[in-house]
Structures are given as C-alpha cells and as structure tokens.
Image 1 (tube, protein in one colour):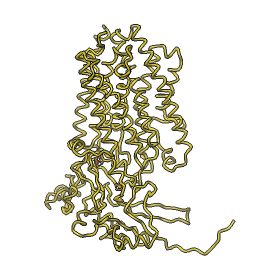
Image 2 (cartoon, chains in turn blue, yellow):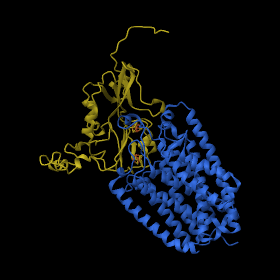
Image 3 (spheres, chains in turn brown, red):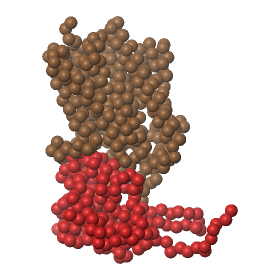
Image 4 (cartoon, protein in one colour):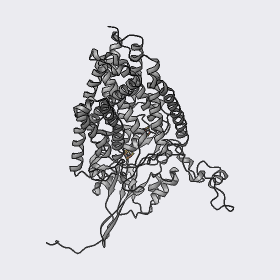
Length: 381
Length: 241
Ligand code: SF4
Ligand code: SF4
C-alpha cells in the first residue's frame, strides 16, 4: 500500500485541480456560448458530443458486464457486481457532464419532460439514459445495503440490463435515422454502437482493475482475480475482433460505393491522419491491440493486457470523434455558399476542457467510491 | 385550412438576392445566418460555361425530418403546413440542424448581432459606436429592428438555440405575403394555398413540370421550382462520332 499512500494525495490533488478548472470552464461556456467551440453550422457536433457518446456507451458496456452475475447468475463474477454497477454510474455521470455542456441551453430542459416527442431518437436516448442512471443508483443502493437477491433487486438488475442494451441502439439511431446523411450507414450504426459499448466498457473495467490492483497489490493479484481478468480479456479480444471485422467491412463498402455522399466523404481529412482508408486511430486503437491480444504471450502478461486495454479505450474515443466528424465534414445544400467544401476541425481549448471535466467527474467518483463504498462486497454465500 | 407552398420560377429569377436582403430586414436575421439563401453552381469548361442560381429557404416539408427528430417539439408543424420553431422550448441540441437535408437551419453560437454590440466607434473621434447608435434610436439589438416579427418567434433569437425561415407566418396572419415574395422585383416567387386547385401556385404546378430539392428523400418539400433561366441558343444538330 506504500505506493498507494504516496500517490493518493497527489492523485486527489490532480483531480481537485481538474474539477475546479472544468467547473470554471463550464460556467464560462454557458456565459459565452458555443462560440468557444471550434464547431460551426457545418460541423454541428464536435468533441464534447463524442465524449458523451464514448462515456455513455462505456457505461452501458459496464452495465452489460454487470448483468453476467446479476442477471445470468455467473457466481464467479459476483464479487465484481457492485464495482461494475458503481463504475457504470460514475462513467455515465461523466457522460452527462459532457452532454450538459454540449446543449445550447439547459434552462429549457424542463420541456424534455413536459413536451416529449416520441418519434425523436434524441428524446429516447435522453429518457433511457436517465432511467438507466436512476435504476443503477437504486440497484447500487440495494447492493450496498446487502440486498443482492431479493425480487426487487433482481428486477433492478434485469431492468438495467435491458436499458443498457437499448441505450446504445438509441445513440446509434440518432445518426442512423437521419435521411440527409447516408454515410452514417443507417441502422447499422446502432449495432456498431452496441459493439463499441461492450468493447470500451470491458477495456475500461480491465484497466481499472489492473491499475487499482497494482496500486493496492490486492484483489487483482490473487488467483480468483487473475481468472476473472483472463475471462474479461477474452471478452475484450472477441469484441475487438468483431469490431475490427465490422470496421474493415464498413471501410470496404465506403471505398467501393459510388453513392455521391460517400464520394464527398472520402475527402474527409482525418483528425489523426490515416494510412490508406484506415484512420490512425483504427490502426493503433483497434487493429494493433486486437493483434496484441491474439498473441498468447502478450495476452497472458499484465503489461500486454494493460497496453491493449489502454489503446482500445483511448482508440474508442478517437473513433467516435472521427465517425462523428466525418459525417458532417461537408456543408449541406446552400451552406456550401458560406463554408469551404470540406471543413477541417481541431478541438478548441474549451472543448478539451469539457473532456477534462467529464473525465475528472468520472475519476473522482471512482476514487471516492473505491474509498468509501466497499465496492468489492459480494452477497453472503 | 390552407396548405401553404411556394413556387420559384427560375426563368424569372435574376439572382439579385433581394429576397435574402428583405428576409434579413423583416426577420432581424443576424450576420452569418441565412433564412433565405441560394445554391450556385458553375458548369462546363471555358468558354462553354454557365452559372446556375437556385434560391433556397425552408421547404416547410410535409414529412419534416427536423420536426420528427426534435426531442422537445420545439420544432413543430402547423395545420397550414408551416414548420415552426418555438424558441422557448428549444434546448439547442441542434438535432434539427443535423437532420435537415436542406441546410436551412442555423444555430446561434453567441449573443446575436455582434456588430451592433460593439462599443468601438466606426471612425474614432468622428462617429458613434454601433452600440451607442442602437441605444440612441431606442431599439433592441439593431437600429432597424422589426418588432412586427415578435410573437410566434423571438424578435432576436438568443444564443444557444436554432432558427430558420417561417414563411413569414407573422405576415400571413395579417393576410400579407412573405416578405421575400413581396420584395422580389422579378415576380419569381409565387406563394399560395396548394390545397386550392384555383390558386396561382396550383395553376403553375399544373402548367409546368416542377422539381423539388432532394425529392428522393421523401420529405415532401413545399417549395417547388419551375422552368430554368437559359437564353442560350444553338444550331440544330444531331451531334457526331
Ligand atoms: S427544409 Fe429543413 S427545416 Fe425546413 S421543414 Fe424541411 S427539414 Fe425542416
Ligand atoms: S435544437 Fe431546438 S428545435 Fe432543434 S431539435 Fe433541438 S430542441 Fe428541437
């Protein structure tokens, strides 16, 4: 624990500074408006929305993992259930910080409740994620008070599982249901978001478990902990493989099609550069970690896993950002009169502060939860 | 209940942009935002080139993607076919702007009419600042603000929400034509009730083969284009091999 003892106050200090800076930036963004973002009437949604998508999907992934013990009764994972649910809550809170700062006005939020539009994927996305947060909090409270298995507690586990399954589909449909942008691939985007939820959620949990285990030299080092890590690494490998195959297929279709929207799309300038039609973030944030995970010796080593999980996690944010930007990079209709044919993007300092604030909220909650909420508690046998 | 629609006669349109200027004045539209706009295109290879000009505005679509996607119903349809926006309900999520296939919705990234908020004199020591001028004439936002716009839409749309053309609903309520129609010197914009077979718009749509923008999307736009401006002549020919 000695390493942890030195690091802990430093870590709290870093979080404190990040939270304070994020809060100040947030207030300034509300006062000045989104003119502080490098967004415009062509690139309507930028990094802050990508951060939301990334964290909300990661939260759904964590909730889906928590369903293994809570819904499907896999006993081996019961000691993880409480932590998984807590991480899902904290990650979603980070996501809500990002979407809160992405909205033009939160003062009118009341109308989302008073004047719901049931044909709007955004409404459903908001409603489902709000419901998911509420269900997860109650479920966590139940587990915290020792109730893992009562009928109501089970119902909450099942409800959070179903919500976590639907929520990524709704995020995907926000993009997939738009007539004007064929490059988002319609309903396929929903499936992609569900896969990405499992991928980034699993990577996040593995990272958390390994970093936490190293700091405390506790749970992760024992045999049971290792076996769980082996299983989750396997889930990560399979999901990375499926997402990689999906990405290759999508890229091949994009390259081959002659639909005009895609011809414009090809000229998108990748934020992180590209090799051929594959963005750097796909190569280093998906293909490379997948290859690493496939190699048995790397998969078995703690460092190899940590590297792969970190690459996948960071790569997921980068991929969400790229997909979001690529579909909006060219002006629609008369906006071509005002804007260049392809709009470039680099996030502004304020947009990066949204990322910092969202991550700081998430990590502070992780830290406090780990300290005070007995996250490794499992039901008594 | 009428169903309003507009016909734009591209043979009459001279591309002068009077519609856009009139719209700006009538609806207090700020710099960078276009309720009335245009699509221009230059085709061919020199010296055989032509310039095409298509005026654009909100199409008040029958199946409007902006309305379907709006989470708060801020973007909504009226019975007379108008697609309207309620600034009080809008949360500025920009989904309507993302969803509109015609690029006619704009977001207010900051407090509107930046120019008129400036405290710097246009010519230092000689003229007043834009802000002083606005205060002097006792106006709101701009010295030429049109308060008749107030009512169904905000006089000046605040930061953090979207805005777009309303077919001048405030004028329609007073039995006046949209201001772009009124201002067009070439009578290229014809407005009316498409549900009435005797209206001017219905007559024109029967007479000419109209087209609508991105019709294949099934959004049922209610701005129709007829004819095309092209005085070019050419000698009758069968081409050659
Ligand atoms: S043109 Fe765009 S803003 Fe106007 S009704 Fe159609 S989808 Fe909505
Ligand atoms: S920006 Fe406003 S009008 Fe547009 S979809 Fe969002 S809430 Fe509706």
